Length: 305
Image 1: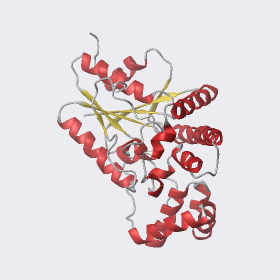
Image 2 (image 1 turned 45 degrees about the vertical axis):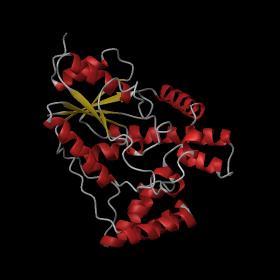
Image 3 (image 1 turned 30 degrees about the horizontal axis):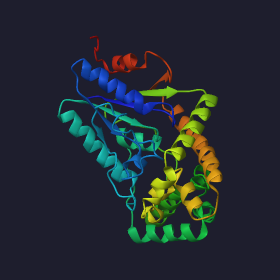
Image 4 (image 1 turned 180 degrees about the vertical axis):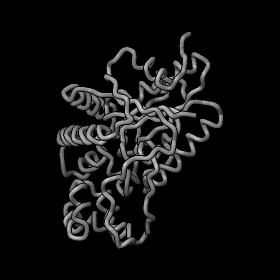
């Protein structure tokens, strides 16, 4: 069964499109289910800050990989890759169309393409994680620049999680960390539809979303996740890091909001740059009224009712 991958930057409307396509398919007699390619939505209780679709927003469509792991769990790309591929196989085996929805280029590629990840060592990873907490990401980035300049040039000095992974791989393998992914080779048949959006519109939507998240109780959500601060991966989610800083007294609520907006905008630009390199993506305007019909047509599904 061919996967429909709905991709693009944050706040562009991917989740809503995935649901609308699934509903159109089901109305025409073809079952469809959605697999999330957002690793942060996979954490239990991290719903507001990750814009996890509510039950109403899911529109009666079955969703996979939402609220699966506790926030203390250090979720890896390799683990998510396996879980998502298992979900795709399960959906396909039951005769339904798998719709993959997400904005992380690495996770989408890991799920659909032939990406293999070096092994990990808990003790080595823990050592670098503790150094990250003690010294900060910039110090570890400087160390990475000494042992693997190419990786350091490709990884942002603020991306602690990826810096730690690069240092771990270098130590375990004695080889450079492959910071730039190889040319993609698909292993899961997929049609990829990308949502494009003008930058000024995207920036405005991101600001509105962040303001809505804080108004909806993001700070209280973080307060209700006592294990979040100890989470190696979950605590670094955009918005959650800033709220943790606010609760620790290192910034005001307003500063946390402003920082979340700024970082999310930077993240969205990186998403756009990542996806722009993939010639397999069919790009559509985010507000195109024919989006649902076009996605169904790309799948080769006749949805005329």
